[in-house]
Image 1: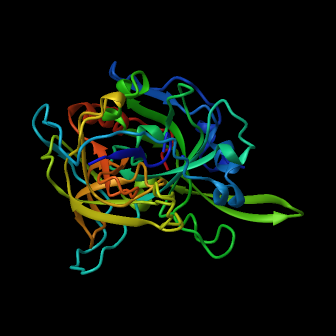
Image 2: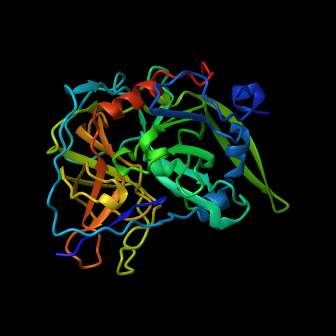
Image 3: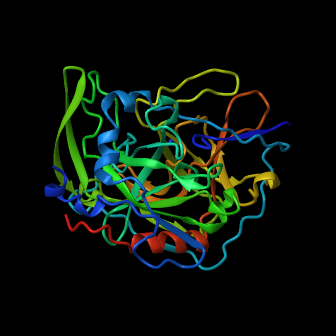
Amino acid sequence: MHSRARRIAIPLAGLVAIGLAAGMAGSTAASATAPPDVVSRNAAIPAEQAIQFWTPDRIQQATDYDDGLDLSSKGVKGSNDTPDGPAGSVPPIGAEKTKAKKSKHVNLPNTVGRVFFTLPKADPRNPKNWRYCSASSVQSKYRNLVATSAHCVYDTKKNTFYDNWIFIPSYWDGDKAWTGKAPYGIYAAKTFNAHDDFVVKEDYDFDYAFVNVYNGIKVTWEKVQGRWRWTVKNVGRLGDNVGGQGFTWNRSTKLNVFSFGYPAGEHPDGDKPYTGRTMKFCYGKTKPMPEAGKYNLQEHIGFKCSFTAGASGGPLLYNYKSASRTGYLVGVNSVAWDTDGNDRYDHISSPYFNGDTYKVYKAAANRWTGNKG
């Protein structure tokens, strides 16, 4: 059978007084030393500028850009993904204040949201350069870390990180402009952390990234004489507000997982079943996916799911507990697959999380953003 796989999204995209002073100056260098194969770069756009850029109308016009990968294979014959060391886990945070209760429903995690950014080396005023992906808060020492796909932070065509990058956990579209879209605030990127093999070699076995963010800002927008005006309030650290998913690596390739994200794009046949306005989920058992030598894709795990563009970067969570809304990050949405050739996506896949993934995560999880909250 003919199979097609495509990236689900990108190469699918008075503040001094309230704690963002440290984010006012962009920098190409990261503040802490990272291992040689971990690329850590500070955001080029100051935090204030990035948050102020994303007015309500711009957020509504951001698109789930899909510069797709076209791959072929016969069915879903898996590659040989194997651990490169012992399995490990970092527990989630955020459930300390709640009592676990059994639930027959799937409670959507507050940690998951949408990231918005503009394409680099391009006119940020042009709506064609406004993009979004999905992402999730993940456990870290300073409760300031977001996990997503590397292609949701880095432009492999222009060889640089995206601009005006922000994360909005529990994002949803309200009936009126901006109403309810950022219930826990907006978090601007300070430092991007990715693996050198993705940044240099465009190897999609390393299509994951961890982003350190500044304190959250609650924004109230008002349009006066056709121009947006805002009032802002510091709401503290990301992990304190929504918690953070656990992290695990070198696990079995056959796990029961939930995937969460904000799909909105079309299937190859043109059907568009999702709007991107609200979070969606899939559930299933992972298995090794086929190799795709053209993109160095050899170690992906995937499962049956019809997610489309926009879901990229959303988490694959193992041992997810609906009562606490927490689990263990074991992957991120990276590639959408049509495995039976009917022009409908039927699988999603993630890089297999191994010791290399943990190395990038560890470097990011111990990085301070300069805000004590």
